[in-house]
Image (tube, rainbow, N blue to C red):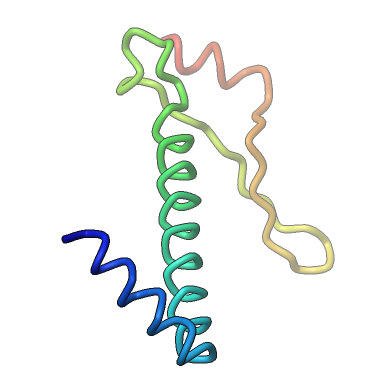
Length: 87
């Protein structure tokens, strides 16, 4: 039964090459993008997985305005912040 399906599909691909190429290209792109997005999401969700209380980990940022008026956010803070947070 499957042999007949493959035979019909092959004949259809041979007769309609342009249409078949567009369909296969769309299928390949869709599957490729799905896997790329799935791997990216898996990578994003794996950060800080080794920390036992990772839901309590926060990031402190410093927001400054440069002399030319641009907003800058940096992930570093001065040393006194650690002592204040500890209190």
